[in-house]
Length: 278
Image (cartoon, rainbow, N blue to C red; front, top):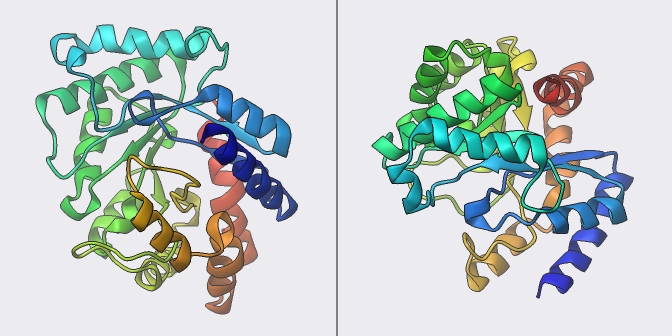
């Protein structure tokens, strides 16, 4: 299975490069199947630079419940400085997450650990949020307690919210704000569909927030932890453009709505570069 997925990934990433996409941030953490050697081979074969992650998603190991944030931060720092395991591959971002359960004691500890690791190494932090319950605000509150430069923070999955007041507050915070689920797929609950997400993005761009926004798609080739086979097939049917949906669909839509090319370049090139530079 791994080899067949890798071959398909090589094919799709070569097509990405042919369409001008030179770099991809992969926010897969150890608890949801991170495979840095897979990414190294994919990058080498396709020519696309891939930035991998340290940190943790929602499947926090029970061992962390009995550890301090300082101890957990040391694990992140070791990967940042020495590489992941024996691979020698060093991550370029720190990933942390809050889900629908909000800020549990362990979740807060992970955010504190990420903050300490950032302050020690300078590596930027990217987050998973439950935007419908506005957890991005609580994340920023923790980072502010550590006096973190919020230009080194990206609040992820923000487009899962259709609340423009919430989105505006995030954009005004000084952190980067990711509209990173820009692809068509059946959404759960009150989460906006892709047309609503693009409309909200245009609204924020028209308010002058191009310098704080980044756009992406949270797409994958094989993600059984999130998409069982039947749902994966449905997802790919709804989005036959895959990783190229933004290039083929979103950017033309933005331009049709008078969004300037300079703002698009800002979101896709300049902002990610500034975020990653440390």
